[in-house]
Image 1: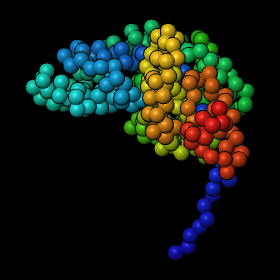
Image 2: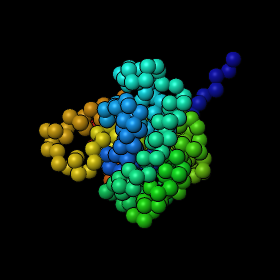
Image 3: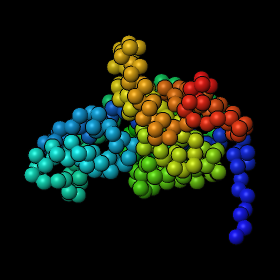
Image 4: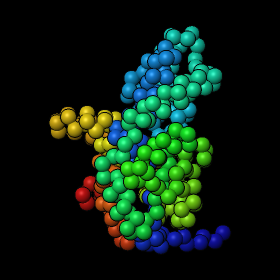
Length: 289
């Protein structure tokens, strides 16, 4: 047996060449409200009401997978059995998904404006020659009006991949890796994945990319911008800290409040690529900020 020496981080690229951005909660729809409103209504119509906290736990997955995971939660499964006399089956999941698809376009229209600072952050990336990819748990049909509005407001990624394009979805790495492929960027250490869900953060790590968690505007806090701004620091900080813990547990190496801080995140990753001996992880990121 011959052991062949392997490249280390010292042989990695010296700068970020691409970012892969999530949509709801990261670049658009502060608080990731649109999918949750549709999911809550779909379960309500099925006679199995769920809390918003329960509905948010599987966020980041393809939406049918999300619904399946939701009704598989022990408390929700118990409610389902009380309402229907049996466990949910594949046909039930299909019906829930159909209800979700009917309701989702309406909630998308009202919720999917750009998160403040998104356009400027993406422009700053482009000024450094960084390519812009994106991924979402939405289907291609659901993403279309979101992308159209984003384009009107000044944000148009180079690549847009959906749950329809590559399977299985997050936390599997395929959407992130397919973005890199279509952008023509490798190795994956030159890619930064930015997401507001634990599943999305984990997908970035599973792909071998750098993974940045978005805290304040995302699913883990789950408040509209208006509701978030109404909170004082004593009410806001426990929500932020709980969200930070969940995203860090999923593997985030850096935590930012919103997409507006993306240029700082890129600078942090570039510094680690240029100086591979530096520490990596949320604690190091917090110390550097």
